[in-house]
Length: 115
Length: 110
Image (cartoon, rainbow over all chains, first blue to last red; front, top):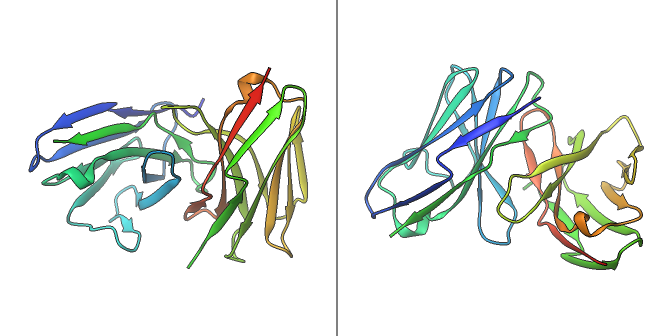
């Protein structure tokens, strides 16, 4: 149980493109979803927390207009990297949690490469 | 701000030996402490977690201890096996969010 699917797994695109990443909880309803960014050989840095039906809460230093998060249903959250640039290249990974917020179950991540 | 420190950053052990990874946290409001195992290019997987009302928890070869007064918690893996080789992350937080440690790369040599 508690399966989280993330799509796509790998994206390569040109600078200036917007990229949408989907995070789905397959067998449970996720009240809260989290988006992380992970650089090579580094830790998971929380970008934002999204709750179904409300605006996402962004961590300090994360541009909300750059990283658009939508959590329209209890099983789907999306992260859109707008006008992506090479410095946005990273591993983006989502997690989902049941009511109560813990534990978090992670998706497989999306490797984003901006040329 | 909130911070979680994790040590060591790398750990090499012989198969069958024990491995211990330690974390300290700064936010005294933290009440949930999970440990995740991440293999190269894969998702972090929850291996054990502990809540602040418990001092110790064990699951087969894995155990976690928590000292809330000192704000530190540790992961203990006994009888290590090569398949235990991975990066391990501790985290501290609550229902709102988790702050992750910097990770420990564990290598178990046969």
